[in-house]
Image (tube, rainbow, N blue to C red; front, side):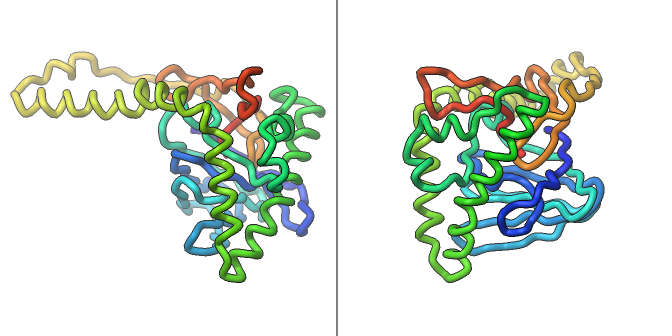
Length: 249
């Protein structure tokens, strides 16, 4: 989970907003808390421009390219599936094909030099512009009824993260899968008349652990909570597909 203020940087097509990207195995949801704007999506079933205003809920499944558009004071709470995977690199920017074809070049373009400050802002803006450069041809092709370029991008994105799948699997097994198994165990206990797990009931509270981070689509208030949202991973020199910086919206 994070709280997001959409970028108000104008892109080459005159639209203000964030960096188009997709997630490989995670569904993402926006709960709009203030302002107005839109999310543009590309999927095999076409191009959509979905209005966003306070109270709206929008979500997109793996493989859906999404681009947040600022319309005025847009603020969104972002909920990501599969705790830990978004932070581990389950996202690929819509960079042009020649960048996607070179893992080292992709990693350099996606990387942020720091979590805050002017240098991080400049890098976040450059990668947004590069992502829009690759996104616009995908959108125009889809509008013309040709989903071939989008399919090519999806395949390239899958290739970029392939080496990270063992790490994704570890996080999934320790997070989402373990949580589902605990629920199964609790249901088994209840069915047997055993309420012992309720003795561990408690309440917790937490606030953001980092303010003003540069996400893919806007400035973020981020949570790094064990068992909920893990710290963002930095690039591994042996893995050119890994990129430093926020992975989710």
